[in-house]
Length: 180
Length: 180
DNA sequence: CTAACAATCCGAGGCAGTCCTCGGTTTCGT
DNA sequence: ACGAAACCGAGGACTGCCTCGGATTGTTAG
Image (tube, rainbow over all chains, first blue to last red; front, side):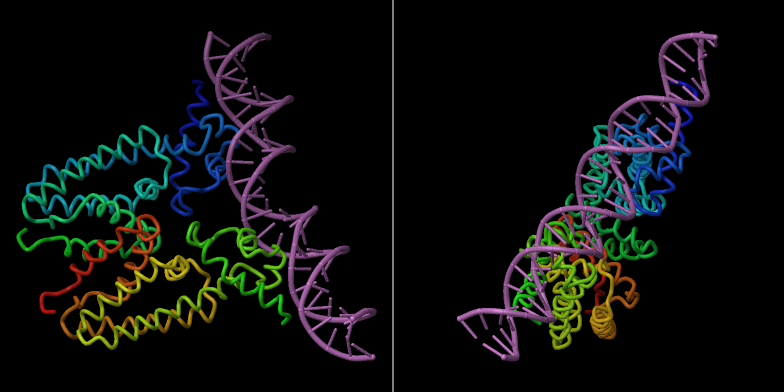
């Protein structure tokens, strides 16, 4: 690849991050190109469609959840691991609109993204199971609830970024059993 | 107003309800007109803009919350009143996409709508205060939390209509104090 | 009953935003 | 300096918003 092409591609991958903050994941691609200081046709030369651009942007962000998983698994207290995992997951989304919208199913899943999601999902099941086995987390909390919680909080993040922590706190209090 | 005008206006007001279910509040007005069996120009003759149509549709739905408020205020147990109010509020939204989106701030507020919202909001503050005074509801639960909860659940309603009740259950469990 | 007027209805079409492609032009690398 | 690679904006296609001028229909007075 030519040197200018590399430079432009990098600018294109960097541009969405700033724009997404304001308008969400569906900014016009023209704006992205303009922000990157690049013609619209150049954008399409690098990324045939919107999905391809997202697939170049999202995986890196999404992969950061691995760190969270790692931290949770190495936390001794199962409840603290579970609560900290959720807390971290949403805090990360609060800082990163791209990640937030990606986890809220607002991105068409490429194979790569799907793979990372799968990995994160499987890990979170383990974290949940461990907390339940320890008797700290209600046994009736299921994977669907986790998805619903993500949906719920991501919306709060979008509309009232200051309220999510309190809401999560209430949910966690409701999820905890006396035993933990 | 002429007889056919009355008939058409009624059809126009009725049409959105069915359409909103599938696509949310922002269906093309052309579709609304088609559904009503009316030309697009007729729609604009009756309602100069989308907001005017919504203002003709929303208040009726929104006013149904009054019934909920009434029920809650006449429920003796303050916690049951509070929990039942929320449960009813969301169940109502689950059945009525218009109401759901209206409460999630997706409608430009006309004076009339704003007035009804205000009334409902004031009433809900009373319900909250009563539950807190009785020592059944955490004293740190505030109006902002109520708004955040509405935002959160309305999004779950949109994307996973079967999960909201469980999620609300967890939140309520977290909100309840031992005393109640 | 009918004619005539006014109220109402209507689809075509102009405008705006976004997507994406085409053909020519510029720039990189040798 | 030459060829290939990459760049670029103009513009066609589509969708949704809204308006215009003419056609239609309800109403009422004679």
